[in-house]
Length: 424
Image 1 (cartoon, rainbow, N blue to C red):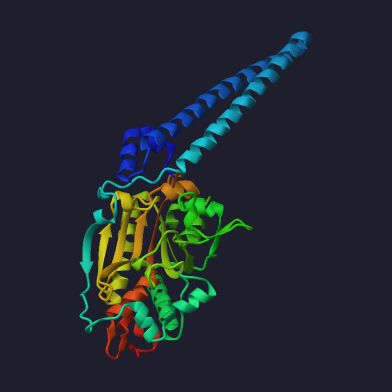
Image 2 (image 1 turned 45 degrees about the horizontal axis):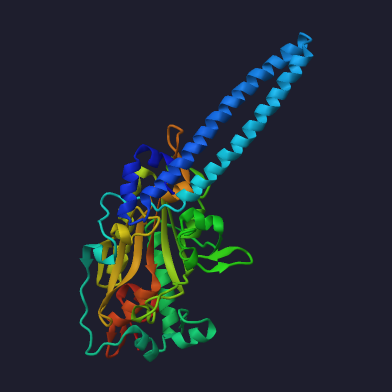
């Protein structure tokens, strides 16, 4: 969440940033936060003044007792008790104001960086780079859901039987392709210096609040109500929360972690042709990169992550483009975000396969993820993450773009993992 210092130092800049993210009621919300902070500070000042009075009167009681002035000493004790009662009331007011301030801050999104484009929707995102070659397909190419059926790779109907729509069953070469991609992505991440983590796929509410999924995306997460646990929408949540309430040393940064997990998203309200097949699922596999870094180095870390994801798409021989998201299309927690999309020739559309974000200190403030500088100062870290990569749409693009009359061609980088160069 934003720090109160950010708001106090330049309230108008904060409001402009929130408006750039198309956050409704930005000024009103900021003013409410400041009102709570003022109430907290005023109560704190009065408490401090009363404590000083208590200390002064308490010192006099001993002297009065020595002088035998018991009645005056008893009056002083009564006065101390009355002041302490006032202090208790003020401390309760201060606590309430602090809690209300935090509650409001949790509802305010992160501020976008200056280079984030203006805009309200995905149509306003800016294409910053394209790569790869569009693939010439056979006449009347098939979409991946028909290819999956033709080659017995994915059974969508069986998934409906077992769980419901959005939970496909991968079989045979389809399952092997999933495993090949997982191992390929993990190997590439480890070769790039990332430490592999195998985290839980359920988290408590504190973890959801730490990375900003709660309260913003509560309706999109599967909630196990009896145990008050949430199925993770991404490995970002458990892996970043490893560093909740942790003070790192400067020489430990940057932290570079990767993790393969299943991910679960309710995707409430999603329907239509754009969610057919693998385009939008409730459960899917994903490899996530997470970095914890110093503020002055996080921009470089972000670029390194972007280069890593681009390298994966190049090795998979897929046509891709990179978009810098506009303010209105970014996530609640991101300060800047780039999306990677691959082109599906059969569907004639771009498919998002990765988002790589820098959250600045926003998540770290929620998490209290900090580091100790060389001169012993404690500062908030920057957190970053990105998909490297999410599997469903990668699989969809591979099936559609590499279909041939003989079968599905396997890109060279995946062949050692698949044990074949063609699915027939």
